[in-house]
Image (cartoon, rainbow, N blue to C red):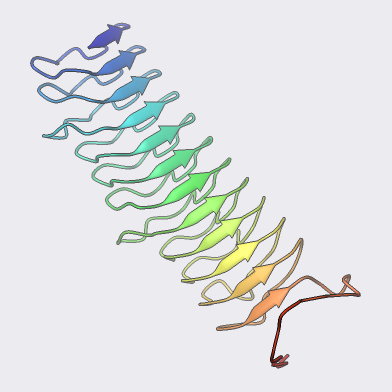
Length: 212
């Protein structure tokens, strides 16, 4: 193991192949390994009971994690509340900052999925500054673009792509919205573009259903 900094990896005994750089990084882990903690108090409380394969880079990144495994956390306060949650990717300041016990989320960008704490594995993907910012219990959402779907809270199975593209309601389900500033039409609907688009070409369609 490589341990650099006051209190870094201080309680390691038989744990191997850990890298802890920064004061108090990986401070509690003792008998297991394969973790990377870089930054003050990164993975401070981790003691997973198994080789955990966690990577945390940044001030207090993954600071509360206890038994979570296979998480990748990059950025100051990213994944700050994760305790037992696993298989999360959080990159950016305060990304995925509220989730604690569940996983399988991808949050990339400043405050992406900041409020998520779904009570179940979320399977959410949010890429872009404040994308999915307000989602708290929504699951299986895909949000790409700065501020994409930032008002969603409880909605599930939505796909929202484009700068400031928005859902029609905070709890809408199965809505597709694509385009800068595009807005959704409700459950089980799809919108591509805004009124600013004057031409659209889709090749290969055999049947068109129009229901707006």
